[in-house]
Image (cartoon, rainbow, N blue to C red; front, side):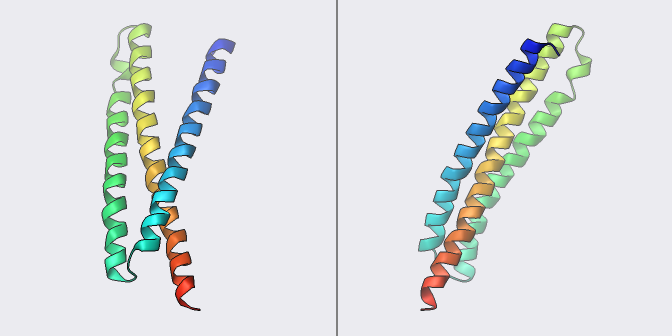
Amino acid sequence: MGKESWAKYGMEKGKGTAMKSEAFMEAKEEGFAAAISAPPGPAGDQILKNAVDSIWSEARKLTDEARKISLTVNNQKSKEEREAVLDLTRIAARKAGLQAAIAAGWEQGWKEGVLKRDSGKSD
């Protein structure tokens, strides 16, 4: 990779990391708020399961799509075609990573919310 390619890669990587971090924090707040207001026990556990199962399912689906696209890179006849497929792979992988960050943030927020909710009841 040339200097320009590395610079472009670094900028794109930084943007992707910032997007994932922001999505994680927003989802963490949502998970926290849901946990604080959720009932304890199985009913609360079901709320968590319903919320994160669908998010993780979407993340897995997007990861599979990125993987399928990436498997076609070497089938391309020209460098330009390979670059186009690599760009599609990057986009798909970025979407999958973003979705995984949302799921992880929601779970983390839920965990912290449950701890806060339950610590208030022990007074």
